[in-house]
Length: 155
Image 1 (cartoon, one colour):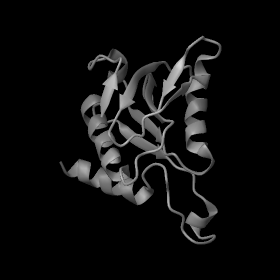
Image 2: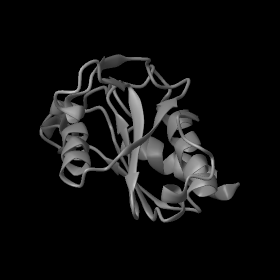
Image 3: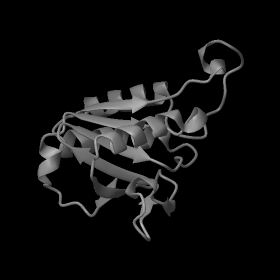
Image 4: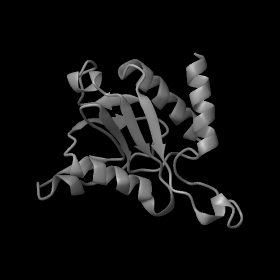
């Protein structure tokens, strides 16, 4: 995981206690919830995040409202105060979920002093007992995150 446009010892990161990350899932609800958090609290973008597991993407930045030529990337870090949001706007590469989750948790432990990491995930009816299980094209599923967290904590 590499951050661009951010000094390694950025003062805003020292106060972070919670890192929120959406998964790319049903109706993009986790991503929309993070966009609402970013916009409502006017969290500044600190970095563009590049990682082998994130499909590269770029598009118009809806949060910068009206600024000409404003772009957003597939993964960006927003932070102000004790909360940071690692906004995923692009899906993860097939099979990359567990390794990506592990890298995020390791980075949070190093750069954020062990901040709590919260993954937002929307569940389909099928996932909670209403039908057959669905394959996820987006972020890591709950069991993958648990596995990655256990692996990162063991190190």
